[in-house]
Amino acid sequence: MSASVSYAVSDSLTMLRRNLKHALRYPAMTFSVVMMPVMILLLFNYAYGDALGAGIGGGSYIDYVTPGIVLMAATAGSVATAVGVCVDMTEGIVNRFRTMAISRSAFLAGHVVGSVIQTVIALVLVIGAAFAMGFRSSAGPVEWLAAIGLLVFVILALTWISAGIGLVAKTPESASNTPLPLTFLPFIGSAIVPPDSMPTALRWFAEYQPFTPIIETLRGLLMGTPIGNSAWSALAWCTGLTLLGYFWSRSVFYRR
Image (cartoon, rainbow, N blue to C red; front, side):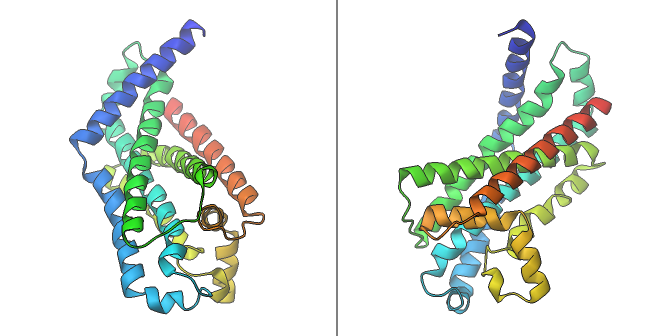
């Protein structure tokens, strides 16, 4: 490993520790990432579960809706990234970093990796809440590992995009609001009801938006339903979004 790469890794780890300490000191954002999906899961399972469950062709509605809500928790974690990056940019700490012998790539790397770790912890808590509500998976160890890998890939993609949003946002408030459509986009997919039950125009959008194949792949891995081509579509979307977010955020950061 060259000296420059070694310094970049060391600086990135330092930034990672900094962001994890911030998360421990100010846990409200992580708490909201967990509580919002859990509240939505409670609402749809206990308030609307009987009505909506009748339209999914049998089976427990909690088993149908959980993969979509878990994905929603993954998207909710992106808000914390945008806010954290924006706060650092607007409060001037980044200008101080630039006067120090710190790798420029370490700032974004620390935020992204730290957010991925926080969101994965939040997902574990949401999945635990789903099991407490009656969710039961037929997946074995291999399927669970594949599902976790896909979720981490999704989180990585959305975190890079949110880092770019945080860089261009003028205030932390706008940084927290801009990623919200990503959080609720799974609703206009197969998270809550099958796209076949939607009106024609909405069904077309639901079938071709990025989160539907991801949800169907998770559902297939966890519940044993057919996956078809959804896995390839999910991987293609995750790869494209990761590359888009990575190059966009780096381009914005190095221009500022």
